Image (tube, rainbow over all chains, first blue to last red; front, side, top):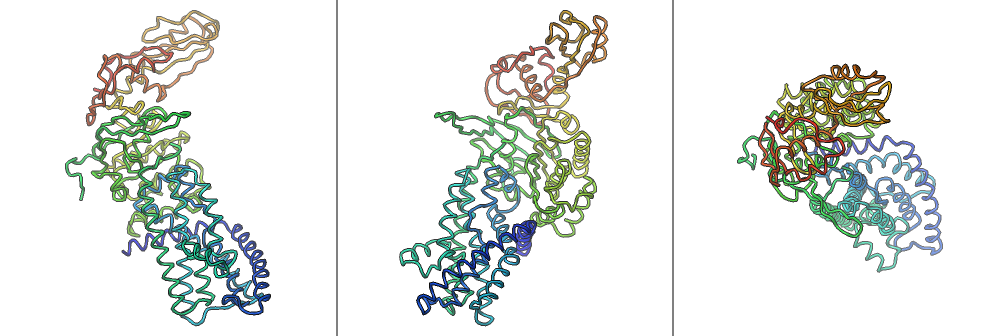
Length: 268
Length: 370
């Protein structure tokens, strides 16, 4: 058990160090996050002001929290669908991954989680700090709120890793996964609640969104951290995230086992 | 422990191992056999060179041995384990280097990759440090240990790759084209290391290569695979007799002359430019290149010369032709002896097709194997 924890932690750290190499890319990401953050802030708070009262629980402060938290998380969750696994399948390098005494899924996801955790420092915190500092936002109540928020954030990064892994694993069948990737990119951000809070969507779209793992990657942690959803309901959201994590992980594991049997290593 | 208690202590054992691929050719689907009825046994501590032309099935075999690729039919046991089902357990006992693929973390320093792999293989921190120090020293990796992998030269990277594959002291080390693209010095250094590793730790070695030098310096036993079938399994001596016969002397002459035939232990292969350049196959067993050169010089002045060493493709073809010379064997998978002795692969039906323009000079069938 301890040995396994050591391996897992080592892989998370490896993912962090890998993405730490590309500092300029992080700065670029931060600038983009902030730019779009102010854009979103302008449009969405205008909607709240126009109504003259909070819209489905969204006051200006809560809306601001939604904007800056969701922008801050963009570097940590994968809404693009690009995975190292897909690349490694199409180049054949995945052969090397199968030579290690590790599940290919586990190592791919831990690496992705490491990457996501690292991005919190140079992209997540500054986005939130700058946004909140300039326009203000709602914050969690008390220690329990922060703890549950942190847990929810961590789960979001994990769900993102296990979900985007499913895009990568489709490469065992498709070899070239660009089509799946683009589809994922188009759908994931929208259903995760990146552009508009899910609560503002029409009812049928809300149902559709919550039938996918995407809200667990963004909307749920934002709701928990911003305190828009509190108490037992917040705990419920975290449980839902756990559910999605288990479901996507199980599906990924099943697909890896099946896909591996039909793997033809590309490129000799 | 091992579920394959019946297979004894063989490190590799395959029986009728076959892998087919479906390929689309236009509208038709074609089934190709990459590996066809391979039966082979490799014992502990052996060093085996696995050679064959491009596309002969070497890499496909390796992928089945380590559980990356599912065999279409036949049996395979590696370290007594079923590779596909027991991949994780097997990977603790096997180290693999794919010459053209990296198992290092591209963006991280070399040392970091070793430390991650140490954790992955669950070496104790002390063991990991000791082994890393050993490998760094033997492969002279000190100067680039803190360099990110993507900035290494090819020679440096290959040394790091080999170290990464051997970090957990595997019982079986499989190297797929480990010296590809390396200069002479780097090749030599790598070979010396592998030889020392085998002597010290009793590691079993399976090596695929296009470089006969690798085989000659590392592998007492050779397997030749041709179009998925085992064409030769035996001592390197037997093979080098076949191979040695194919050194080709190319001479540029002062003036065009008739074909240089009739020189002892040689065969005239071709004349170019009306006889200005001639190619002569030399039987290295019976004569030497200087002797042949002297004989040529006695007839006509030599302006320039080159000696062509046999390449793997040629070796495979020679093995094949020699087999065809043994007589028409029945078509079927090779019986596959452990070591020593040629195991007959398919008959000579394809031998004619692969003959090529060089003719059929060379030793007779008796040179194969023992």
